[in-house]
Length: 169
Image (tube, rainbow, N blue to C red; front, side):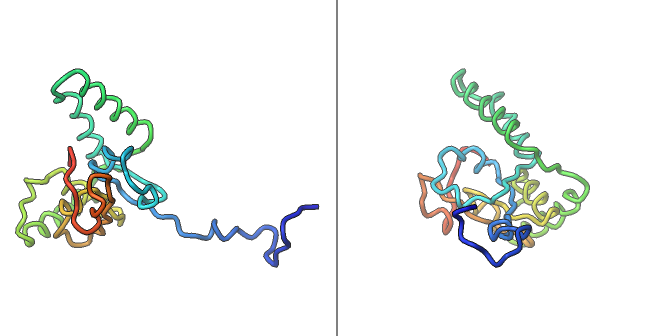
C-alpha cells in the first residue's frame, strides 16, 4: 500500500501539472547567444524554439570572428544550438507575414532593412502565432501582431522594461 494521500480523482486522470498549459516561444538570436548568462530561466518558454534565421546568424559568427579563440567559441555555440533545437523555417507563410511585419515597421517609422534578420524572425513568429523571447525588446518594437517577451540578462536586470544591447541580432 502506498503512503501517498488518497485522492478523489480517478486513477487515470492527468495530474494537475499535466493540465497546466505549456508555453511555446521563439528565442531570438540575442537570447540564444546569452542563454548561459540569463538571470532567470523561468522567464523562458517551456518549449523554446529557434528559427532558421537565427541558425543562419549563428553560422556566420565563426566565419567573421576576429581571432581563433573567438572563432572556436562561436563554432561551439553554433554546434550547441544545432544539437539543442530543430529550427522553424522561413516558409511561404512566414514570407507572407514578412510583408505585414515590414508594413508595421514602416508605419512605426523604422526601416525593415536595418533589422532584416529581426524582421524575418518576427515574421516566422507571426506566421506561427508564437511570441518572441528576446534580450533586445526594442529590436521588435512597432510590429503589429507580434507578442514580445523581454528577457533579463545579468548586464541589465531591467531588460523587461527597457531592452538591452547584445552582441548579435
